[in-house]
Amino acid sequence: SKAPVNVTVTGAAGQIGYALLFRIASGQLLGADTPVKLRLLEIPQAVKAAEGTAMELDDCAFPLLQGIDIFDDPRQAFAGANIALLVGARPRGPGMERGDLLEANGGIFKPQGEAINAGAADDIRVLVVGNPANTNALIAQSHAPDVPAERFTAMTRLDHNRALTQLAKKLDVSINDIKKLTIWGNHSATQYPDLFRAEVNGANAAEAVNDQKWLEDDFIPTVAKRGAAIIDARGASSAASAANAAIDHVYDWVNGTPEGDWTSAAIPSDGSYGVPEGLISSFPVVSRGGRWEIVQGLEIDEFSRGRIDASVQELVEERDTVKKLGLV
Ligand code: NDP
Image 1 (cartoon, rainbow, N blue to C red):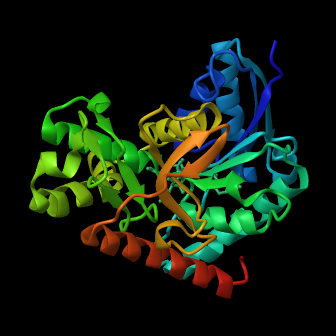
Image 2: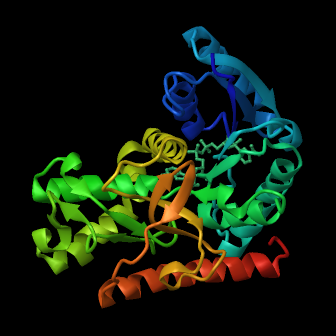
Image 3: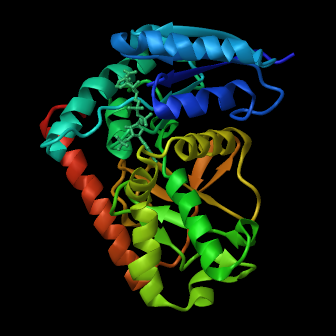
């Protein structure tokens, strides 16, 4: 039988953690033949709540779950980790500027990067969910010099999945009819969900929509501001859908993406499409042999160019801010 995979989850007692852990333990993260050991990281005051979640995990008697350990020390939590899901982050408080938010998160993601560098397994793969996810990933990565940079990624899969559904509804087609959709840039309001390279039943999606006004005034803002709309409706931020997207991201990273399609993930740029090298920006990606690859050779129209550049510019500014703070 297969050896268990160590999966470290931070912010384990939070909303997303609660939606995520049961799916990991049931085999949905890595497949139904892969046993897992969970390593949960929380801040000291949330350890008790994480213990409660662990009790519920015990009570599911998941056949694939071979152990749960709970820590408040990142060095211990990341020791031997094969997969790390960095969910816990500092939320933006009232009156907090973006620089304050980045600084507060530096205090979380710097030590976590150091701990990953010190003790994670050689095949460690990191997905950052906690916001601002792209720049948090950059901070962690820059403190893990011995880990290949490409192992640090940030999540735009929820944006991707949201865009799939909005397009499917608009065209009254199934999700399965849509291929090659892309989220470019930052996981923020500037992100660019791109239909110009997407296909619907083999035809160009932007042409099938044929409605630039809908695209600009409806589709793009609906996808980009979906998080706020969920908070408005539910009275709480999206959690199950964020957890679902994290599962999708890691599953595809480990198991590969289907032929003839791609997905979206924020990965370190190699300079493709004019995105400065090293920025962790969302691209059209495929996963082959356990590695993300940026889909090459796409022609970028002028409208898309402007949108991509604006989101990438925001990432450049975030990077400059954390550089000034000495965090990267
Ligand atoms: P959630 O579990 O709801 O969210 C966690 C993080 O995911 C937030 O940064 C949130 O960003 C982000 N996120 C990314 N995408 C989404 C999305 N689509 N919808 C909602 N959130 C998204 O937060 P909770 O407050 O319930 O739980 C956080 C937990 O993390 C707490 O238990 C806290 O103790 C813990 N924590 C742990 C740390 C550690 O392990 N070292 C450090 C800091 C916190 P946004 O704020 O923008 O919604």
